[in-house]
Length: 136
Image 1 (tube, rainbow, N blue to C red):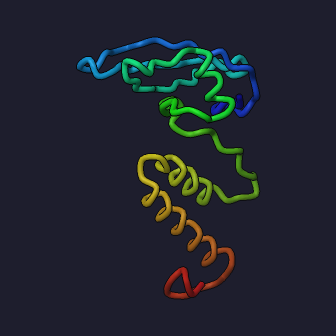
Image 2 (cartoon, rainbow, N blue to C red):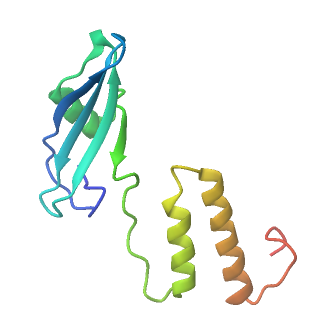
């Protein structure tokens, strides 16, 4: 798998730990691994019904094939994006990072921030001044 922190590929060896049984309807399991390159944890959370508790082998298969309902990554919240070019002015990098940081919590808010960044870029660097982005 590719580490969501540093983007280095490594052979995962996830460990799982049941953390809570929920009203006899199932359990929460945390699956975690440590990236050998950056030493950061990768953590997934899964809710399983009693008859559907999954093993470490299946976790590894999921990561490789994305073929079963495994749950979701809770840490990090997002995969790290590739570093932006040093040619990009700091004001646009800041806006991009802000939009990226809220992508999972609010895709619409992230899109609005991205749109605002694009509009400012077109106005300031492209010398295009219209009253809305569609006309620009």
